[in-house]
Structures are given as structure tokens and as C-alpha cells.
Length: 429
Image 1 (cartoon, rainbow, N blue to C red):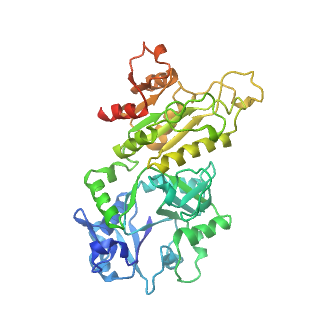
Image 2 (image 1 turned 180 degrees about the horizontal axis):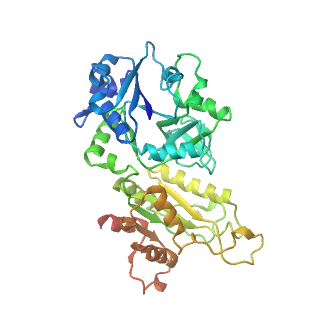
Image 3 (image 1 turned 90 degrees about the vertical axis):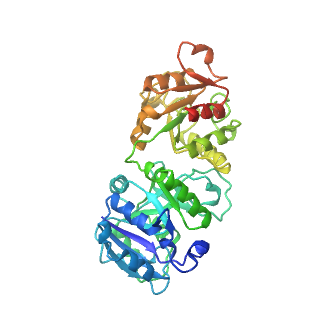
């Protein structure tokens, strides 16, 4: 498989590290230049033909990387006589690459199961697939807006005021591109990969999809980020998050656990975070566990709220969490309800299913999507259904007080006052 590593920028934000003596991708991180880490990660994940675009101080890269044979890859170079931005170098691949290929930055540290992303790209028949993820600061990031199937509808730029709730879904700067999409490029001019190239494809009705994953990818382009990425490498987080490896998760109920219990919630206006919920989820984010919501939402089957209204509720939760530096890695909800007799009910959703808690269908779906090791997972909730779901899945449970604890006394489970104390309990284990 081919990849384009973009390494032609000046790297002014990292000048305190590079001293303008080396290009940013050559900055040494934990004993190795960042670009070497990128090459080794691509090689490990199935990429063995790499184009590198070089510009300012590019000879430092070409001298060090050479032909790439020392790492078992083949390297060719695109020399940018004038800066081409984050996407302009793609012009030079028009007649050279005839298959789907990766595009990423040479100053980014990542470890991504490319084969899994490529499978998604092919299944969606995408022109371009963006690797996206939630982050701790979505309020000042470009948000990738998709439909429920992952197709990108628009890119909401970070410098625009937002007066609506949004999914925490941020472009990470890692792409799979179909060779047919390169017809966009007519000459070697400066192009922003996301705002020009990808945005043009979306506007033209092309199939652009978001591949959302918790795998590690971070820009090491500022001194602060450079230091943080170094710590993550040292702690083994970068490699551990690759979805080839089994992951750990804390499953969280929604109503009464993350947001204040108000009976059946039908409107986003009624969503209010529980005190300490954002702090608790932020602790999960920093722990190496994934934070995954599993929630029964029978209001859909009962005809009391539409799927779109429930999605809006979850967007509000993500927006409120993001404002406090926390995020959810996955959201699963069951729209079914087994009992009939409600005015306006949706007949096709009135059934016994395998996803409504205490059944374990949502957990199984998350297990497949995130390659979870269920023996390393927990569930936190405020009801007997949450406890029984954990029991049925064979994972430990923490029951929040204020739930149905009096009905669960026969079930061996830990108890906690609220989500924050529950998460602290889990992370001490």
C-alpha cells in the first residue's frame, strides 16, 4: 500500500526545539526523529511504498531517510519548490498511484490499524475517508458533521460561533484517498487538504466518510504537544491504542448516571449533566480505558421522541462534556420496547430484542467495534438493569446510590454515591 507523508512545512511553532536547523519532522522524540516513527508505524500497519513531500530544509530529511530500505520500505520524494500546503503535493501522485492510499503528516505521531480503516473505506466506496476522533477541546476544533452512516455532510470550522449542539468528532489529519479523487488537482498549487480538497469533494456530492476511532494520533507540532506525545510514547499509550490490541472500557448508563434522571427524557432541553460527570469521564479518558455509553431509549419505540431527537440529546451531552475537557469514545442506544399499548408507538420497534438492557447486545456491538477485552471492562449505572447487564456479560458492576439498590442486594456488586466516586473506585482496581 502507498502513503504520502507531508513534510514540506517550515514548522515555525516548534522553533524552540528545531532552532530552524532541522525541519519539524526531524525533531527527535524519545530517541527517534518524528518522521522515522511515522514511517515505522506505516510499515507496521501495511504500508511499504511512501512518498515524502519535502520543502524547507528538505535535504535533512532526504539525507536521513534516503531510499527507506533500512526500514524495509521504498521511499520517493516530492520536492516543493514553493510551499504547497497540506494537500498540494497530491497533484504529483495523479499518474503514479492507481490504488487507495494513505495521506498523513510527517510531524504527527500515530499508530493506526490501517487495514481496518481501509476495509471501512472500501465498504463505503468512498472517494476520501477521514480518520476522526473525539478530543478534549472540540469547542476550538474543526467538527466533522456526518449523517448516522458516517457520510460527511460538512466541516464546521473552529473559528465560527456555534449556537447548536454537536458531536465531538474531529478530523485528525489522517486520510485514505481514492485515486479517482485526484482529478481535483489540475496544477501544483497550494491546497489545504481539509478546507479546500475535502470540502470541494463534499460540495460536489462525492462520497466522503468519517472513520471514527480511539486509536492514537497527535500532532507534535508545538513544544507543549511535543512533550505530551513524548510522555505518551514512554508510557506505551501510542502502541496500546492500536485496535489490533485488545482494549479496556468503562460502560456507562446515561439517564441518572451521566445526566440528571428526569424520567423519560424527550427533549435535549431537559438534559443536565450530573455533578461530577465531566470530571469522572475525563478521568476515564486519561486512564487508558474507553468511555462508552450504553443506554435504553424506549421513548423512540413508544413514539414519544424520534431518533433524531434522541441523537440531539446525545449531542448536547457531548457538547457539555467537551466544554469541560471530557469526551465519549462510543455511544450505543437501544430504541426498542417490548410492550405495546402506547399512543403513537412505532410498531416495528415494539419487540423483544437482544440490545435492550439487561440483554448484552450493545456491549457485544462495542466489543466488535473496539476490539474489547471484556475481562478488563466494567459497567456503571443506577438501575437493576445495568447491574444485570454486567452480570449477563460477565463483567463487574458499580451501582450508583439513588438507583434501585434495594432490589439488587442479592447481586454481588460494588456501590458508589455518584459517577465520580464510581469511576475512582474502578480506576483503583
